[in-house]
Image (cartoon, rainbow, N blue to C red; front, top):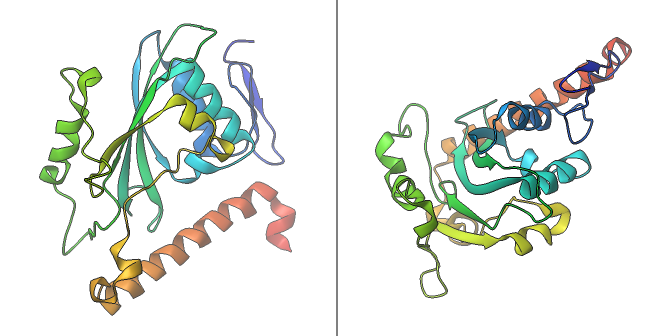
Length: 227
């Protein structure tokens, strides 16, 4: 009934009548919760980790519903370590809630990649406001329906490009985990980060993985923690 629901104590699975699906994934539940809070034509910008973009099962169900019932128009892919635990890659997903419709509201998703070949650190090279200038210009808040891509077949280093609804919905699991830029560090050893930077990134990834396993352990309950 409405937003009423219950939480299973065994695995913290949220069951709500106004959610598209039931899951113990807190990030997926957060996206569903934000959608329920919006008024018709309300706008949202939600910070989500990468797993929200590609996870199967409940994740796929939520992405397909979101693309159909909302106008999911922009995805900003952020550098590693800005939100959540260290090493976790984050994104900002922009969408508008729309009235019920037989046809999908999402027509085109614009993606800006501020991650590939971008190296920021909290101390030596922190992300600054001016680093977002190109994204803000591309977003075109005055009239987002007149956006222009910076990527093309002849300009393949452009960080801003669009994907039609049909392209998105036909991807495996309706994944929005999309990237197209060539990662220079994978093909040119001269562009590799300094050893201490690589080591720090490995530590961040391991810490992030450990944090995620701790969440899984907590979801499994006291018996698993005692094992």
